[in-house]
Image 1 (cartoon, rainbow, N blue to C red):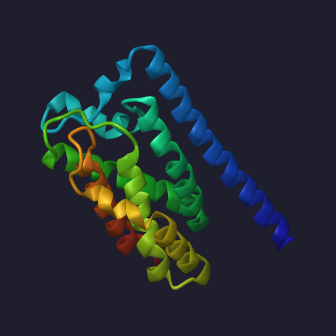
Image 2 (cartoon, rainbow, N blue to C red; image 1 turned 180 degrees about the horizontal axis):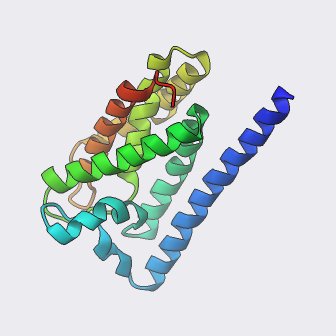
Length: 188
């Protein structure tokens, strides 16, 4: 019976990740065919109407390359984070999205910050630290795998290009570490 429940849970996790993929893909297709019209809904620091971008900015991307560079890590990290449970996944996603967005709005350079990479970096920070803090073998293994395969992401928190929101990467990573410290051992 336990194996059946695990199988059902695994199928639900895959369906959720696939749904995330579909949502981001539909938005990207719409944005592509409207000449990037949705990009106006990005996070624009210290501009009151730009506050909406805290929520909407992660859903839009500046180009197909930008979309493709984000969608695979988003799906992989979402699946790995779902190993902590659906409630934890939702809590961590909301926390990272809001904290990253607020920090970008307060402290980032003047630009329109778009893309889900801030959330990805938040997941990255959470997955790196939370497994070790949890003390659970399966979750420690996830931390090790993420560190081994995605450790190079850490360099994305440094300024590299005027067209890349390294601030979103940095604040996302910090948000993920804070979330790990707050909830890695909590029963959510």
